[in-house]
Amino acid sequence: MPLKKGLLISIGTGIGDNPQSILHAIHLSISERNPNFVAFVVSEQSKKNAQSVAEELELSHNQYEFFEILDPNDLDECVQKTEEGLKWLLSQGLGTHEIIADFTSGTKPMSSAMVLIAFQKDIASLSYVQGKREKGIVKKGTEKVVSFRPIISKIYSKIDEAYNSLLIYQFDIAKSIIKNCQSFKDLMSEDLKAEIDYLENIINGYHSWDLFKHHEAKDFFDKARIFLKNIKRKDLTNLYPGKEIVRHLGYLGNLIGKKEKNPAVVADLLANASRRIKEGKYDDATARLYRIFELIGQTILFLEYRLDSSDLDLDEIRNKLKDKFRNWKDVLQRDTDGKIKIGARKVYELLDDLGHPIGKKVELFKRLLAQRNNSILAHGLVPIRKEKAKEFFEKIFELCKETFDAFELLYQKSTFP
Image (tube, rainbow, N blue to C red; front, side, top):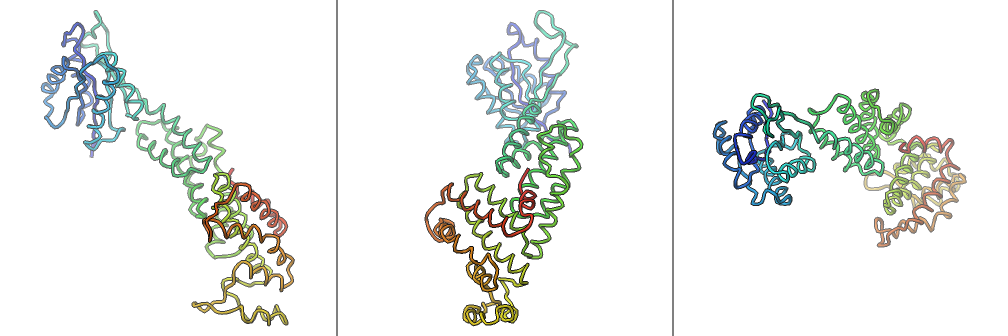
């Protein structure tokens, strides 16, 4: 199915109000593009020229519309009417990537308005008719339609905009910008297409990673790597996390898929909390830090004692606790699903009774844990302040380093480059 096209064109009166000086150029501009719809931006004096061309080209009445400017030397009014013409074309089901703006004729304010709107509204192509001139008039038979693409220069700035949005974790904004750029791929060079495709996969990769969708993130980064060799900008190539990190994402995805407690999962969640602090989302960060504190205990319980806090084996606990089991008989009750579960504080108490030194740490975190409970995202109405979120983060980070071997390396693997 052929693509639809729209033409937004300003119409003048001609040199010395001689319409013959421009009619052929206008006729050429329209006939060469063969648009489905034409928006004529006219003055009271030039409207008859547009009507003449429309009739000569046998355009049907539903194919074109006039947008008349009362004062063709008023730039503000020219901009307003040109924008109305563009809106009419868009209402016909066209996208801006399917529209050409022609500023061959008209007053200087009319032509300027056409160029301004083309750049502001991401119109695909700007054009004019040029040729050999005699007494200021393009000589018939020498005319040539010249086009250039203002959107391409804008796409480079849009790439920068998407890049900067990604750096501050504004994933939806970055994705929206790149999606808009994709509409103009038919106008791009192969190198620019590769840059857009690469950046789209990179943004999707980091967004999926930030949502703990590690396998999905790995797939996006694998796709991004296909385009990597064609990317010349160092700041963009630096966004690719590297093969080792991409493999690590697959490993994290496997751990989470199997619901397996592991220090790598703790590190990934901690890096996520750090990003929330950088965004100024201190309550979100604190909620994650509380979960990390809980997960640290659960991970030790699982790795060192083969006990799952969400499905405890009563016989295993009895064997491991021996005489201390009597303190737990009333606590370890089966839930409605038949499983025995315990919360964060009880995990640490159990670790203490099992003889693990981290069991005492819960006392050191009481104030910070209470802060989370009073948070507006937990049980209270008190928003978390930046200093408190950072203090909580630092203490959790230290606890992780004390508890798990090579934790800083795991943390680095979960930190966005």
